[in-house]
Image 1 (cartoon, one colour):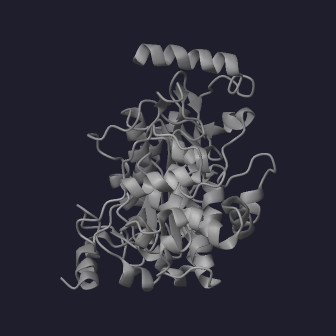
Image 2 (cartoon, rainbow, N blue to C red):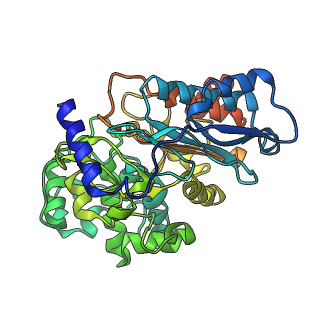
Length: 427
């Protein structure tokens, strides 16, 4: 299967012209350690060890002005490079900064590694899969609540006649936001739907009563339903509302939108591909690879965000500035997740991974975004961890080491986390 995939993928690249027409052969990458002061030799040695797969400059003056610990930051970059060299990642774009900072993303590794290696740049874009939900759909839900078109207690059957009298129809907006709807995290990804009514009927069949009502079971389907609900109560498309909410970041390039829309074929050379899909018979390359997203695109609430680290930073910054939506209320309304002690599930986003007021999301395909409002800071990690063969469920997730290092670098006190959790939960 591996040989047939690589042969097929090779033919795809050669015949489609998506890559070869717009990109040069891979060139060695290097980083530049700039600034007005010299780098400590031990830190420079760590970077030098991985210079061949690092790109963009690292400026110690920026680190100091942005109040980022240089030693922890460099260790996080080195750990990312080690994961690339160990084959656990093709590459990643790492970005940590504050609202008043001047840090730039740094690229580590490759945007793709099979059938050929292609260089990764800080501007490389990723299809971030279910990160679409917390970054795009959840703010639109809160906007609809603020406009009194929805409430936390609104039930699905109030707006979807197909769900009237069903258990799913009695699910509320808050239960969807908290991922307590009973919708499964895994569903038949090959089941097709003719229209939304058919999808709603299937969702009602897939829905099960949660075994423990106060425990969350994360599922991208919650975002898909929330997206349909917002469109239903506003009469507008998710795409149009996202453009209005995020402005220039969503509209950048009229033919190359960033929000809730699959990329045009000729633009895929700037997007990192994902895993090989048996269903599509090719790599997933910024297009839907399952029928729910295929039906709802370009307005799917759970899929479709194609973004660079810079563009995502602008979106996350808006969320931090509007963090009153999450701060306090997110802690009070958060619930534990099935099989997890931390983080918890807040209203639409995970909560508490890096301090009680932090919120964000970790996508199974490799990308993460976390906001730390108390530090006025954010962490962005973009990766196609599932490229080219899918995520190995038995393998360690490199983010479990890298993200805490970045959080500590901007002020999160790891050693005091258990005490904070105890105060938060009352244990």
